[in-house]
Image (cartoon, rainbow over all chains, first blue to last red; front, side, top):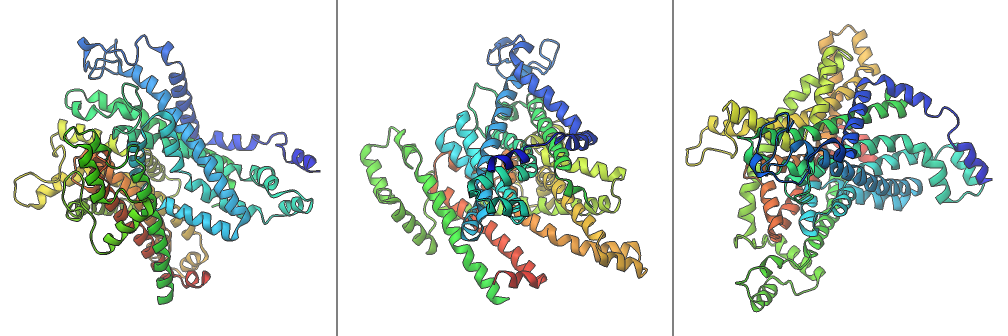
Length: 292
Length: 319
């Protein structure tokens, strides 16, 4: 029985047709997607795209301005900035995606349990969420990164575990309205267990807002990682991330402004592209937002 | 009303205790213990370490240490900084005021930008201005504060020479408003741009909601002018949801201030926090965390009370 219902819920033909049509109408979201594809390709193909090594120093060529050999110039150790930006993009974007996955997993779990069970469990979990959200997360991040080191897994966990709160609230809200609907009652009548209802009946219906929150979460995580690295608490040198490349830039900005401008520009463009894509996804997946 | 306020104040106590306790545990769980900084110092012998440990009560179990810390705090004793060997409170106080000065100024500027932008883009939905305002808010939301600060420094300080490259006032000069302003404008604008984008966006959507309400239509039908309808009917109601957003934004504002302070060498609490974290100076860290958490919770409470005052439904809903 449960199996039959599960099949009924599986996306029927054309599930994505309408959202895709709406998404295509959002021009900025399309432009954002294009930018993201280009940046992602640049990061993946980094070793093929440039002839320089990201950490290879060239002390005769320190702080060289942008030129044909070095389109974005070189840094204080003569390393090619474009190469470091391409390689740094790998880590920055990877951390963004992984930290978001952690945040969405934790947030969905908390929100689903709170929203489905309600009552005392709900108020306990939501009180906990209130505590977590009412604290300036950068402060805790600094503490945790300073104390527990800053390898990629630590940074991913720390950022993820400090940014699940919005997802939890979102999922809780949509679970609370969904669980009152008839299809859930019907499932319960058939003797479907709570875990099954949550995973197969409620979660697919709450997917829209989760996807939107996830996309915006990547942007937030990239910003957070770059801030941490700028403060010297992120991924340690010589490995490049967009944030850590800005760390020394302030001392040299008078003589080599390009070292300050290009890495930050990459963060900015990536984050704004993701935010526009998230906005487009919201229009596409959450039609209620459009009724205005 | 009084009962509601008292209930809410009592509700914040466990919240504060929880936040401080969690921070306390995090700080004590530094690999190598809170005294690990001293361990690398060749002038500090093992015997010294033991003495310091006893003196600070670090040999006792964690909950006991927390209780001691809390008891001292309630007596007004915030402890002594490890790094500066000075009482924490005066050290923190000055920094806090500097941060509030920066945060307050940029908050005001953010509102001064957000109100006209939000109102105009709501009343002229889908106009060229509205699209421009949307773009502005996306830029504000997406730009890393510290990078915007760096670019502002390069352009306005290094290239144009209009503003000093960091600090809060000219060292050694007597107090003057113009001098303070010259140092304030860059960090303030950078922080304000970030917040103004979000505030104007929220104001726009709550204005749009308000404009389509029945009472606004009624007001129009009675023949009130556009100006009156928008400013005295729609805007008043649109501002209420904005209050919540602004209060919820306070933790973000603290984080933003920390970054702005780092870029512009502003002697505020964010930089003090960062420096203290690098030196594991945990009495200072605990003080800063407690004060920040208290402020955030206090402002949320204030907003809730103001809300309950404005809208009686909230008062009775939870009783």
